Length: 143
Image (cartoon, rainbow, N blue to C red; front, side, top):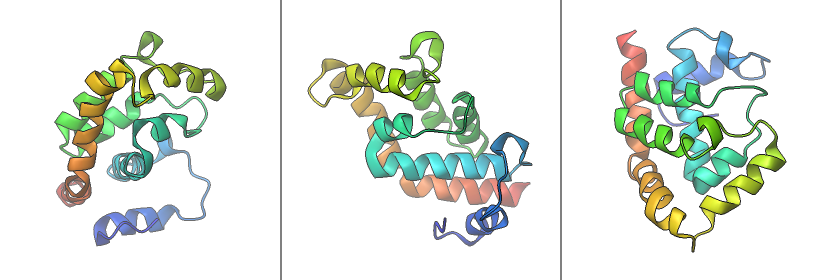
């Protein structure tokens, strides 16, 4: 995955073609890969695409919140945390089909939940796209 930032691209290149579990990667690699990958998915199709993606089995979505926070994107970490709170117990259902049924309630463009809650939180991610990559690079350089 080439994202256009030499420092960040170098981290992704280290793991290209390798079967590495994200939770076993060292910092700053783990947080950079988590935040930049999440951002790429969100940029492509918003939160619904992010949550519909079949993320690594049994991965707690809180790791994405933590990754955004580590790279200095506290507001986006808070936004993602707020979206996670919409799920039962604050955790998306492990079963993808069950999760998709639940997501339909919040992510239909005409639903009040989408317009009032999700839309504004999601727009913050779209508006801060470049800042994610800059924050990831700065985090790497500080480590």
